[in-house]
Amino acid sequence: MAEHRVVVTGMAGFSPLGLDWQQSQEALENNRSGIRYMPDWDSVPDLDTRLAGPVEGFTLPPSYTRKKTRAMGRVSLMSVRASELALEAAGLLDEENLGDARTGVGYGSSSGCTKAVQEFTNLLTPGSTSRLNSTSYLRMMPHTTAVSIAMHFGFKGRIIPTSSACTSGSQGIGYAYEMVRYGRVRRMLGGGAEGLCPSQAAVFDTLYATSTRNDEPTRTPAPFDAQRDGLVVGEGACTLVLERLDDALARGAPIHAEVVGFGSSCDGAHATRPDKEQMAAAMLLALEDAGLSGRDIGYVNAHGTATEHGDIAESQATAGVLGRVPVSSLKGHTGHTLGACGALESWLSIEMMNAGRFAPTLNLHDVDPRCGDLDYIQGTMRSLDVDYIMNNNFAFGGVNSSLIFRRWRG
Image (cartoon, rainbow, N blue to C red):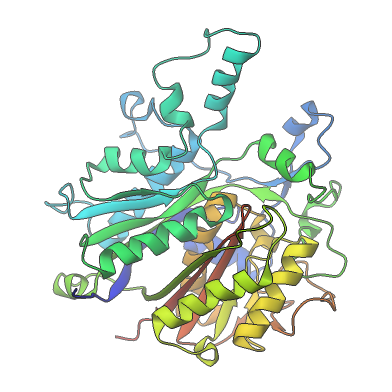
């Protein structure tokens, strides 16, 4: 079977840091947090945390009519718009054959639109269908992002929905990469999205895993820090356009990076307690896929959720596989964007690699001595000239993923 090199020709996303790379870069350079106090959540008195990372200022152009958007919730609207901007950046938006079977989508979120879930909940309590309509399920279904993207652009190729919690975005990119690499399609959109909802914070509240520094939102979360007190949820969306290198070169497309490795594993054990051995396995699989050794990786974007068990297990696994590599977690800036984080962090890591400047872990002041021996980037941006970066994500259910990108130098 012929294999193809796979490159990233378009990227776009929305995060608590901004609506494009320029806004995001400015926020990173100035150590600006995207975490906010959420006054609307005061209506849920049993919720311990009131903190989140919302996407502010997201709007749709006039072309997004009600007819086009009525079956989309916020998570789909962000993912479709991010995909449109990524296709535009790749020079593919007006491609004549974009709607044929050579283009597919690998995309996911932790869940669909939670407002639609509420509509169905009303069916059970108090037993009324009055809030249901013909689009309720389309907005609620776990594969709403992948399907909405395909329908909006008329794609006819492979659809790979990835609803795997915090690895939804990274698995979307990883599976998209494999589809192009092994010749199943010529191009894929890969990514993930999440819409903000207090129900997501409640998931972690029940595990005593959320930050409750409600009166100092910009000082939390604090991944890998000895004084961290838990995670903060966020929202966002990000799409990467992946295509064959020969196709990209033939049409003179911009090339932002090459995808060279993807590894995924599962713990097969506890649903919420991470297994550092299987975290390491995902990284080793990605290195094997890329034909690299741990010494080749110049920077790691860590999952780094600011939870005790997660931070310790992940950092120890990373140190065991890669040694004392430079590492940071963007969740100190953005919070945990759940299904979007694997895609958002891949995008921002690629941009940082190309700029040669990598963000520190915001709020990391005193590294937990139980964490692995890594070169934690702290305080300010660090200038690094590297050829390979790794992005790692780990999800509830024991799902682990690792992506490796190579800097494109022509």
